Each structure stands twice: as structure tokens, then as C-alpha cells.
Length: 92
Image 1 (cartoon, helix red, strand yellow):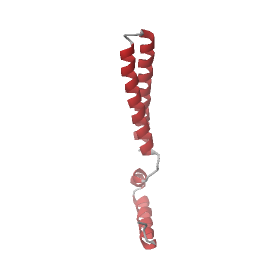
Image 2 (image 1 turned 135 degrees about the vertical axis):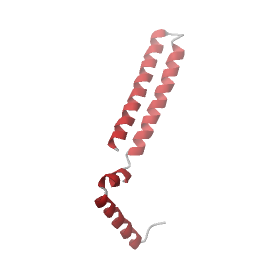
Image 3 (image 1 turned 90 degrees about the horizontal axis):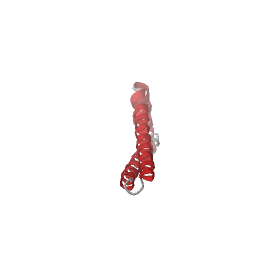
């Protein structure tokens, strides 16, 4: 259900007033469209890293070098995810 013209104008006035009164808060609550997908991507990378870590640990019994390479890739992915989350939180 769309807003009427009067409702949309009033909402825009409230948004402008908020931006003037408290610009940092207004920036934090503004939907930039990028914050959620970055956090979701970081979570997905972390989970894939965890799966790679566990897989690598299991494979070290069969082939030590191959297992350790996969463990390293998993740890790198998990570290990347943590860095992404920390950078995103710093932007807020």
C-alpha cells in the first residue's frame, strides 16, 4: 500500500528534521542497502571457513599436506570474515 502525497511529504519533512537535529543518528538509521548484505556475506564466508577447517582436520589423517592446506584456507576465510565484520561495525 503506497503512501499518499501528503503522508510522503510529512515523512520527508520528518527525515529532513532528523538529519538536521542529529546527523550521526540519521546516518546510522538510514538504509544504505549495503550493510546487511555485507554482514550476511561475512557470515557465509565464516561458515564456509568453518566447514573447510573441519574438513581439513578430517583429511589430515588421510593426507597431511592436503589437510593442512585446507585447514589454512579455512582459517584464512574465517579471518577474512572477522575483518569484514569489524570494518562494517567501524563504519557504523
